[in-house]
Each structure stands twice: as C-alpha cells, then as structure tokens.
Image 1 (tube, one colour):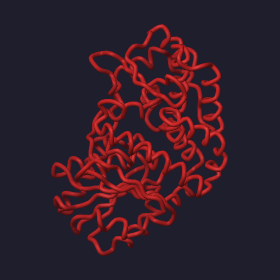
Image 2 (image 1 turned 90 degrees about the vertical axis):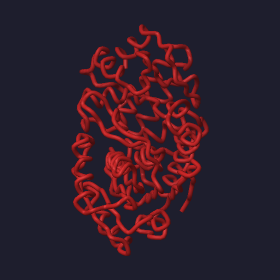
Image 3 (image 1 turned 90 degrees about the horizontal axis):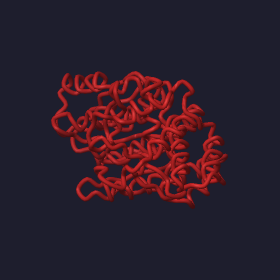
Image 4 (image 1 turned 45 degrees about the horizontal axis):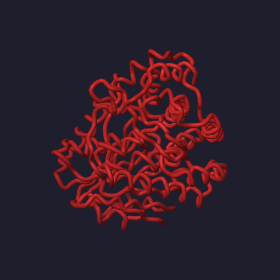
Length: 357
C-alpha cells in the first residue's frame, strides 16, 4: 500500500492506495468521530462491496442508502434523499458519511456532508479509476443542473480517501478507459515525463496490471494533491486541472447527462483544447497527433459529437465556472506538460476548432 497526504493544515487528510484495503477498519477508524455512519452507494456497487464494508465497520452504528446509478441522477433531488435518511434516523453532528462508488456518488455524498447540519465528516471510497485519480481528492462536491454541470456545490474536504484497486476488476472496459482520460490529463498539464510513461505503459494499464495501476494512481493523486495544496478554492493554478473540461462539459450537457461518460467527454474536449492551442501557435501539429494517438489507444473518442454545432458549444461554454465577467477562459497547452488558463481567445480560432474537431 502507498500513502499520500493532502496538506491543508487542519483540513489535511491521507490518501491510501493499495490492494484489498476496502475493508481495512484500521484505515477508517481514526477518521470517524462519533458512533453513527451512513454509507451512500449505488445499485451497481451495493451488491459487490456494501456488505463487506458494513462488516468491517460493525463496531459502529451503520446505516446504508442505495441510490440509482448514473450521471443523470446527480441532482438536488437525489441529495434530498440523503438528507431524508440522515434526518429520519437521527444522525447528529458527529456522524460520518462514507461515499462508496464513483464520482457521482462521491460528489453527492460530499455535498450532502457539506450541507447537513452545516457540515459533517465524510470519507471517500472511490471505486472507479476516474474517481480514484480525480474527483475523490480535493474536496469539490456538488450536483448538476440542466443548464450546466457541477454549477451547484461546495468545497468540503474528506477526512480520508481509501483507494482499493481491486474494485477496478469489476469495472467495465469503457469506464476504465474513461478514467485514463483523467490520468493522461496530469501528464499533459504538468508532467511530460509521466505522459511519456503512459505512452509506454498504456497496454499494461488497460490490462489492469496491479503494479502499473498503483503507480499511475499514485502519481495522479500526487499531482492532484500538490495542486490542491497550492490552490484549494480554485482561484488560480487549480483551474488547470480542467484541461478539456469546458468543451467536455458542453458535450455532456448537450448530449444529456449519462449519454457520454465524463472521461469520454473530457477526451474529446482535450483534443479540442490541443487543437485550439495549435491554432494559437503554442503546439505543433505533431504534438496534437501524439495526444490523439494516446487517447485512441485507450479506445476513447477524439471527435466531438457530429450533431453539435459551434453555437451549441458556445451556448453551454459561457455557463462554465471559469467565465469571469462574461469572458470565456479556457485551459490550453503552451507546450506538452505546461498548461495555462487563458482569457485571450481569438473567437475566429475558437470557431475553427469547434467546426473542425
């Protein structure tokens, strides 16, 4: 098992990464303040891991809530069912929520924890690659709205993140690929050496080789932790973690939440960001081709939906959280391994990208 720490002073917490650690009660116990626990999971994960986790925490008073699976359920209405459960069973301010599932479960459980009695503890137990390397770390919680993704939420750091790579053995191939989109992101925005490592070892990752998975997750989480430590509330460098996301969120919103996996939309969005970076004179065509090739090896989409027009993209992108005073700001690549947030976007070049990719 490997361990990292996210250093945020009194909000600091550990990230545990290993095999067969989901039911290690010694990893949970130091981060549980009271007697009450609510484990929130979904219909796909519950039959696989819920009983195992409940038994590991049997010394506590454990309640469970099983939610429907899918991005389309990441709503205020679903979070309301978490509040109902907490109130009906009399959970107090020392309760701990545990998010057992992917990014949707983690985001909603964290948001519920941020709001319930103005903030209670929660622990992330991510079961998808995407949530293990991205959404479980950093304290971003929230829900989607019909007009925009993740526009309603709160920053609320977990008490711990427990990553058991054995959960990836039950992950569908497309979900594993979707997670790799976020792994590749870290190489593109701040670590060209890691990007090259991924190019050399992508087949081992797709084959779920344990050693390679632990290494990729560790390096991804280390990058995420370092960025969050510098900029917890996303007022600066943390925004670079959204490479490809402004385009990707537009795809998700237009296609309907759940139609494209988040990582699939990020993949296509990253190619669009790379294409625009090339048009702005920062990347060479060979760089864009290199990025595209790696995403293709992961069986990820590298083109936007054919039924989306430039106007469709712009309509959704202007609702992005990085828009300030009406100015669209995008994460672009000055070079491979070097990302920047730019608000000085040539509209003609943006339209060329939106029409071409």
